[in-house]
Structures are given as structure tokens and as C-alpha cells.
Amino acid sequence: MTYQYINRTPGPINSRPQKKFQNRTDEVDRHESASPWIGQLAVVDIIQEARTVRTFRLACGQDKHIPFRFEAGQYVDLAFFIEGRKQQRSYSISSSADERRYIDVTINQEQGGLVSGHLFDCVKVRTLIDVRGPLGRFTIDRQAVRSIVLLGAGVGVTPLVSMVRTLVAESWPGSIHVLFGFRTEADGLFVQELTDLAHNHRNLSVHTAWSRPVGRDHDHIGRVTSTLVRRLVRKLRAHTYYLCGPDQMMQDLHAGLQKFGVDESNIHTEAFGNSSSDSELGGQYDLFFEGSGVRVMSRPGESLLQTAERVGVQVDYSCRTGTCGLCQVRLREGEVEMLRDDALTDEELEKGTILTCQSYPRTKCCLDQ
Image (cartoon, rainbow, N blue to C red; front, side, top):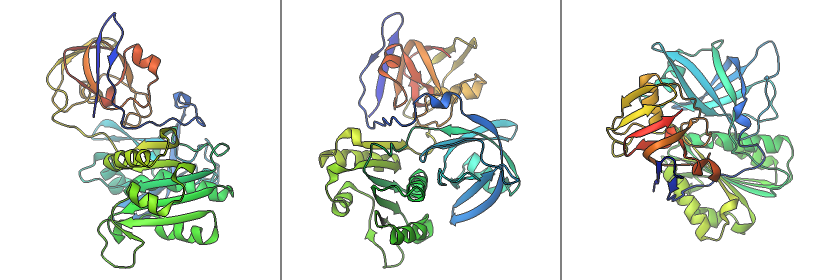
């Protein structure tokens, strides 16, 4: 399901959205990320969590506190110069928001991943890393919410782990239900820690599902589904849900929970991972970046943000998944296909604002960046 936005200035933008997700949390203002902290932190520890996953612990050194506060569920941008070009990626913070000495970012080494490969091969203890953050609004309003269900899979569990660690550290009185999915035992993340926490905190329950287990002693065999959630969690409509993981999993969970009567306003999602190219999207079209005076021909499977990066047009960005809103520009002329618009208000959409990381040209376009 996609969005098609057609804008022929000066008329209003016409949209036919078919929304897959909605993420509307109020605790962190949606524009707070306009002025995040920017600076360098040092790697003080590297922890092997699973066969392809490591936690990089970042701190100021000399027992100083981290120079910013964050909410559990937020992320930071890490930037590196690789092969002469600046590369930036967003990673969720997995440590507790009450931990002031450091932040943890837990990262999966993607096959062929440029930045994750650099992190695993070149970054060592004492390496200085450029950091911007905190960013994101996938957070919990602890005053308004009484019971939460955290559903995640793979390395997508990292912001949810930060939530558990934070709520436990603060002795939050509400109920916390956790259901995480992994492939094999070698891929499990934080399972023992969460199990131990559940033994010591009566308001916390933890379950794991394994899609390709090797052994036999497991809670549940299979994937994280709404049917499994219904089996494990009583009174489904009484909880607030936080989902993070593969796109298809979140789509299925979102639809399944709504089918079981959960109100959409009680389902919050966080897109995870960088957007990947799809050769069926976009095509070869003439693009004009008005602010930079650059005209270029787009390529099949290339988002507007990727095209801008290829030709050196400066467009700010962070998440690359359509949730931060930093990569927005105005579509002055033309038609694009936009996959997500979570970060845009109705007013911005009416004015022709689009997210370049989620937009693929369908015609000749003029962009005011």
C-alpha cells in the first residue's frame, strides 16, 4: 500500500493515503528533534550480544554525565566518514533513560551494510563518534498509560528494552507485558536479563517466540502474531501497545490487534532499519532541486533523498524510515509516490510537503528544498 501525491502548483496537493501505521505520542513534542544535542562521544565498551549484534557503549569519559537527557524509545544519529563521504545512520538507544553515565546503542551487522560493517570492523574502544540526538517520539506517557504491551522482533527490540529498563528502574507501578521474537538461540537479545527482571518484578511478564529454534526448551515456537498476543495477554483493549520490528510483522500485528478490538490510538509503531530500494518504484524522470539549482535524472528504485545524495544536493535527514520528518521538502510540481507520512501533519500535506526518504518520482518534478 502506498500514497500517491500529485501537486500541480498553485493548486492544493491531492492525496489518497492508505495508512499502514499511525504513531501519535504526545510526551515528546514532534518538533523537539529540531534542536538535538550535537557533539562527540567515546566508545568505552563493546559488548557482543549475539552472533551478529553488538552493543556500543558511548560516554563522555572522566565520569562525566551524558550531555543530554532522553526518553526511553528514542534514538541517536551516528555519523562517520567512510571512503571520503559522510555516512549517517540512526540507532535506537537500548540503555535506561535513568542511566546518566553512558548510552548504549545495540547494532546488527547487516550483510553488505556500509556503516554497520565499518562499526564492526573499524570502531574500537576509545574511538570518538559524531552523535546527534536524542531524536524520535516513540515514547511512553507514563502518567497517562497504566498497562503496556511491548512487541518486537530481532534487533527491533532495542527501544523496547530501553523502555523496560527505564520503567523498572523508576519502579513504575503499571503492568508491563513483553513478547519478543527471534530466529534461533544464537539470535536472542537480552533474554536472560529480561527473564531475571521478571522474576524480581511482579508487574513484568516476559515471553519469547522462536521461529527457527534448535533446542526444545522454549516458551513459544513461531513468530510474534496477534493471535499469540491474544493468548498471552488478558483484556486486550485495556492496554497500550508498542511495536518495533520488521515492517511486515508490524503491519500484521497492527491489523490483528484492531481486528480484536484494540483502538488504533492505543497502537504505536516505530519503523526500524533503513529504507531499501525497490526497483519497481520511481523511474527515470527529470528532477529539479530549486533551492540548489541542480537538475538531474532520477534512477529506478531510487528515492528522492538517494538522488539528492548522489548529486550532492544537501537535504537533512535522520531516520530514513519516514518518522523523524527532517528530510521534508515542498513538491512544487509533479507527482510522487510516498510510502509513509507519519512525520507530517495534515496542514503540511495540504501545502505539498513530502518526505524525500519515502518519496519516489512518477513524473517530472520540481522540489523546493
